[in-house]
Length: 372
Image: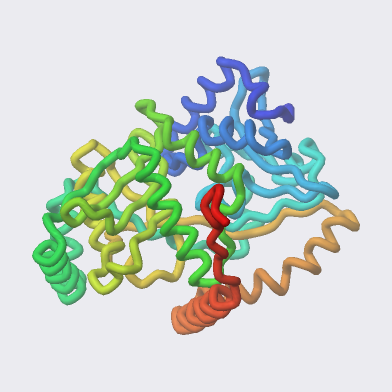
């Protein structure tokens, strides 16, 4: 086998077509974060993005999009921004991971959302975790009946809150594939506020991420596109989501809601309406991403799996990287595996967010131009 490393923008039309062909042929690769359009977009915005093109007998058999950082530290494409990574290849491609690292000039490669079971990465998997899915292949009615039967109390509560919201604020409706940039700004504003309130890093404080989101929002092809949804009560937006889709799968990415409506559980309400619209537009599943949120447990009716692990080649850089990362990864695994600890972790972060917000100086109002 031969491995060539290029920038995404250097791929020619035959390679782009081959990437799409390989992805479409394997159900486990049906995720927009594995689509070539996503790799091209990040490649235009980040100089460290590369693609390993794998050939066998002169024929392209696989692609690995990745990030190459200083000291040969390798990361999956969009590592902390996305929820799925993988080798886009022919089924059961058997190329040793260290051979790929050597060709890519990488000392170490950490992953935590790798498509589980790929022969290249499977020997290096340290954990395999479920990803909750909303399977809509049987239609929305079949899906919602599963939710109602599995969690009757939760379902009844959400529908009660929906009726109450409608009575007090107006008819409930969902806008699918909203194109207005102001709707996107409303959503990202809520999300930035949520990040600050919960002690997380505000991703939208980075201009390149805002640019990426805007580019994805404008993309709409049969096999890939951005989907912006917004739930309204009357004319008032209360909850929204921006995600990416393939021809069959919508992936959760940035959900948020107006905290003034929190008592109505608008986020869960939005998910149900979004699933209904996804099914009506021919999508077969909604990937909610792995994580400790309890609402995912009763909204799911299917799962897929992603893997965590690490590959390294003998080097000083790999050793230093392991020393720095091992305690963090161990602590994260302990929290993820124990819902009670996750709730404590989430509570602590929210407390930190409240303190951080309270310490921010009040904005100073500027005098109008010409005022004395």
